[in-house]
Length: 391
Image (cartoon, rainbow, N blue to C red):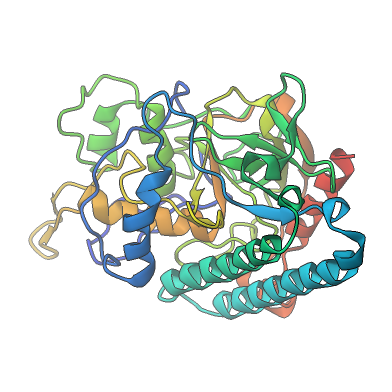
């Protein structure tokens, strides 16, 4: 993976590291901070988020975000309706799968990030239509047949932090914001990641380093202090990678993952790993999406969830002039967009005990993915490994 370019103009879309080349500090929930409107403010999805997604933030000491995602338990459906309901569910799944596959293929053919926001909005809409379809099916069925809320993700498995569904054996864990995440997720390794042992943060470790090396605006922060976990979460996507692994990004999707410059994180011969999140310390990993408070489908994180940092103004010399400052809100727009697009999960570290599978070689380039009809071979292997481990 390539390091982020921390010295960019306000109008340029930076190369936010996504689920392949990302990197920690003590475990703690990300701090809440008000972000100023970014370049996509006012668009329909953003307006919906500002009106609805704030509801997802639980009060201090609260139970966590509202879970609304639903499914139908066919065993609880009257026998006279069971087959028609099963067929209706299969049709909803087929429509969602085909729509997402086609939209991903269209997106992969784009050479830059100019359509990324529209892609996110379209994928959110596809997910929403499916959840609304399941909810509508449940209206005409016994109440116990429509499984939603935390029950969707199954029952806790002892004190392991794992939730396991009884119907398909899928397993989940909760991040420290209360969002359910698949237990097993993959990371495309970069050239600096060790091939054995733990993955721990490298590079810049203090706020003074962020200011001096990355040109970050750290006003009000003690320069000699170590970078907090909330700031590491943000910085990994905003300016991490290469020799500066602030935290470690993974992906929960089987689809191809791309940088903002639309290069593949799996095109280098660095291999990949499958991480078991249940082996990480509680509170040390965070999903880069959240759940809609009405239907429960995945949506981008709302403004203000990240502890965002901006860039200072920088004098590039007499020929290039002054590079303007970039606000935390503008950076956050890009980070949230990238995190949702690649279904990222950022972890503070990756201990060896959490690595269940290692893959060698490359996954593919953007062009390879297009030729393969929008599919990632490693993503498909991730799903196969999940099923093997979730017996």
